[in-house]
Image (cartoon, rainbow, N blue to C red):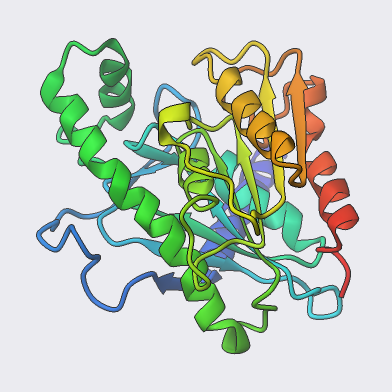
Amino acid sequence: MLKKLISLIAVILIATNLVHAQQKVIPLYNGSAPGSENWNWDESESDNNAWNTKIVYNVSKPSLTVFTPDPAKANGTSLVICPGGGFFALSINSEGYDVAKWLAKKGVTCFVLKYRLAHALNNDPIKDFNESLTGTNKELQQRQMASVPLALADGKAAIAYLRSHAAELKINPDKIGIIGFSAGGSVTASTIFNYTKENKPNFAAPIYAYFPKEMQGAVGADAPPLFIAVASDDQLNLQSHSIDLYTKWNTAKKDAELHVYNRGGHGFGMRTQHLPSDTWIERFADWLQLEGFLTK
């Protein structure tokens, strides 16, 4: 019986790995990414870390991993998904692949963005991130901050890529959105300011985003609708960033929806915590339906 169970688990693991292996991966840039042409380190993954989830780190070559819906359900809407991780790592499952799989079932074509990250010299990006929060290691903070504008540029480039390749990707160029978590929320929120016709999102969803007032700009006359979610007990105290964004949109009479969950902490993503924040993605789907992005 034990041998059969072990064999079954092995088959499931192999099948899971094959699913990931079969996902199409698109390089974001044709050649070296602008501004980091001399980055030559290799992207790495870790399953055993302090966050207890799969992470990707040392991203030097930005890419989009594609999750396509059943053609019978496809509605033309597409979504760039930006995992978080303090610009040192990407929480690739809970804030990336799992989000994509869930929304693909709703007919949305999803593209998980691996944006450029600060180089983790000791192969422990979470340790680097934790040290960056203390402010004691100035070199580490400088490396982190130098990666931020490159990551933000990758978010805008991802939207522009989808719009310019809409026909071959079988998506509607007028139904391109972006969602991101924590640092990925920074990438997402940056796209709703100072955009061009090519890289403007048709909707955006910064989730427990790091995006203080000094990073914000003026609300455009054609500002995209926003879906925002955060928890009151966010350990990084990012609640005000979400509230400020909502207030800015609401004051400008632009379309925005804000969910502040009493509990959920920072980084709830697709984790099951048996809290109301577990259902944020269902509320996101409700909002997408209301906005007309889930209809063909």
